[in-house]
Structures are given as C-alpha cells and as structure tokens.
Length: 263
Image 1 (cartoon, rainbow, N blue to C red):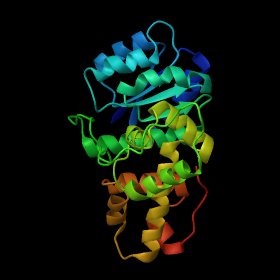
Image 2: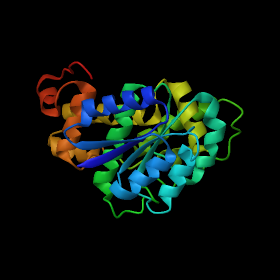
Image 3: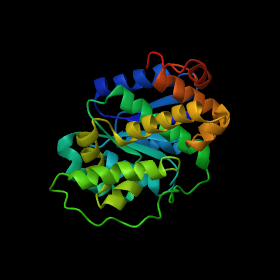
C-alpha cells in the first residue's frame, strides 16, 4: 500500500484533508498525519511515505524546510504544498524542492485528489529507487525568463496549451513546464490557476482523459494500450482514474460513448 503523510498545524484543515483522502484511498493507501514539520520528519523517518502533503506555513519547522530535509534522502517522494495566495513569493524558496503541485487553501477536493492520483501514477512508473531528478519532458529549450510581477499574456497562454499537447503522454512535472516558460514553480501554479480555473495537475489529468476518450472513439487499441499511450502503464490504475474523473469505466465509455456522474 502507498503511504500519504499530511502535515498541517490547523486541526480543522488537517481533519478535513484526512477525511477526504480516506474517502478515496482507504483501500489502497495508509493515511498518516502530523501536527507540524518536526513531527512530519519523525514520521517520515519511520514510515517513508511516498507522498507528502505539507502546509507551507507551520510554526517551528515549516513546510519548505521539511521538504528540503526530505529531499536530502529522497528525490522520488512526491511533495504537494498547501499554500495561500499571499504566500507565493515565500514559496519561491521551494525551487530546489521540485514539488508536484501547489494547492490553494482552502483546498479544492477535486484538485487534491487529482494531485494524489498523479503522485501515485508517478510512483508506479518510477519505483522507489528512482532519483526523481529527471523527467521525460525535461529537455526542452527555455522560452526565456519572464517577470513574475506581470500576468501572462495571450502568447504565454497559447504556449502553455501547446506544451501540454506535445508532452501530455510523458511525465510532465511542474518544474519542467514552469522552467520552459521562465517562471518559478510556485508562480507558475498560481498563474495557471488564475488563467485556467484549475490546478495544472487537474488540467493535465483531464486532458489525458480527453485524449483517452478520443482514442476509444477513433482507434482499435485495447484499453490497456490506450492507458499506456496517455501515460498510465498500470491498466487497473488507469481504469480507476478514468472512472473517478468521467464517472464510468473506460470499457463502459467505449461501449456507450457517454460519461456518468463525475466524483
């Protein structure tokens, strides 16, 4: 089973996160909780969770310091930060951490679950011994540094869409696309949310499911082959994510062409 560690000093926030994760992952993941960064590091040392959900602003050892300490021993652990808009300049210090996602508080359930789904997908692909340092879409020319005091213009919006269209079947990390566009990871996540109305990981998941739908309509590939084509080498996990996002299994969708009630 996968292990997910939540670290947040706010009792209500921590309880809500734990409840949401147990709703979706009680059968596949062990959910661990910590009240602060120091406790999170103690639990990490014992349990070695594959996924960390860290509040950035915690007393004592904050989320960024916790993540940096974890990165000294593991590059493969997926780190998801919880932050507020006014903390994004502070979050720029996380550049060496390479977080999977930055989620705004109060945390949107769909974006939280999409981020955890992506973390599990990456763990299945890379395995526990992967360095996590490189990703498939990493080696692309940078579009140049952009001032983070100005919102993205129309061309940047189009560049973002084009990048996703070109690399969605690969392991796109926030650091890759942010670096390509010339933004810090935290600022890119903030800007993406403002521009598209969803987190980057949520948008990417939905885009992959859309491409899977197209392949089911236009190709004779098996469900297993379609899942692998859009970035999910584990067919069972692809089916699970597709069902959660679209409300029906891939085989049901291929048969009826109709999505169900999305979770």
